[in-house]
Image (tube, rainbow, N blue to C red):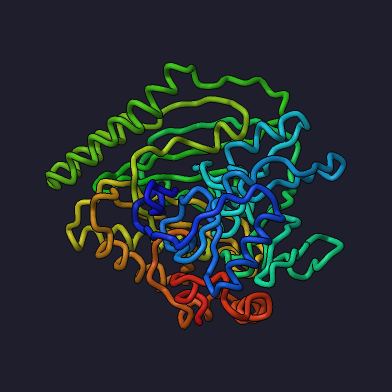
Length: 437
C-alpha cells in the first residue's frame, strides 16, 4: 500500500520503497502509456496489487503502478465457464462477480485480500492434492510488454506462452487482464478439529489423498495438530454456516484479538510461549459447518506476521516436517506462530513451485515484530535438503544460481524475459536476485 509522502510498504512491513512516481491506471491504455513513458525515461516500472507478498517481488523504485482501479469483470463465456477479469480485481471480490452465472473458482488460498494478478504472479495456492494453484486456473491473459505493446495469450493467440505468462513473477510485463477457468458453484463441508499430531502424521498420505482439501497446523511445543478437512458438495446441498456470533468469537475475538495479545506477551516473555501455544490449541478450531466455497476457503488474518514457505515433493513432506520438529527441539527456540502444511497437484506452469510434481508445502511464520532470520534460514536449509522450492512471494534467501537447477524451464523463462524485456524495464532487486541480471 502507498502511504502519504509517497512511501510504499507491504502488508508484512518487510519491504518498503519511495517510488519516483506513483500512478493509478484505470485502463489498459493507461498502463501502456505509463510503461512507454517509464521506458523513455529509463525508469523501471512495476505493478502492485494488495502488497501481500513478504518478499520484494513488487518493490518499485522507479514507477509504481497501483492497479486498484483496474478492477472488475471484463467478459464472461458461460458456455466454457471462463471469466476474464481486470488484473487489479481482488480475490475476495470475485465470488460476487461469478455468483450470477452460477460459477466459482476451483480452489483458493486461505487469504483472499490479494489481487488476481498478484496471486498468480507469485504462485499463490490453496490446498488439495487434486487441485493446482491459482495460476493453474488461468487460461488466458493480456499484458503490456516493455515496448508498450499488448501481448494477448489465449488458446488461439500465443498459446505456447501460457505456461510462462500465467506465473510470470512480474518479469515479463504488466498484466492488465486474466482469464480464469471456473467451475460450477459449489459448497464445502468443513471439519476443523484438534487431533494428536503423531496420528495425523502417520495417516498423512491417506488423509491428503482421500480428502478434497486437507491441511493442518502445528503449534510448536505441543503434541496436537489443528486439522482442516473440506469436502466439496453440489451448490444445492444444505448449508449450515457458522452462526454470526460464533464466527465472530472464533475468527475475530480468538483468532485475531487474543492471538494478537498472545504474540505481544510471547515477544516480551518468551518463556510463556509453550503454555500459550497449548492454550491456543484448546481454544481454536473445533467446529463443523457447510457454506459457499469462498466463505470456507478464506479466513481473516489481522495479526501481522512474516512467512517462509517451501514446496516439496509430496513424499518428502513427512521427513522434512520431522526434521523441522527436531530442529526446534535441538535449538531450544520458542516459536509462537504455527507451522502450516498444505498440498497441491502437479502443474505445467514453468515457474510454479508445483511444476511437474505433486507437492506438499511447509510454511513457517513469525510475529512481525520478531526477527525471523535465524529460524527461517535454519528451516530453509532443511527444505533445500528435501528438494524444496521457495514460494516466490514469501521470504527466502535463494538466487538464480541455485534456483535454475530446481526448475526444468528456468532457462526457457529467462530467455522469454530477455525477448520481452531486454532492457529490464520491469526489473527490481528481487528479480535480479532470483532470475539473474
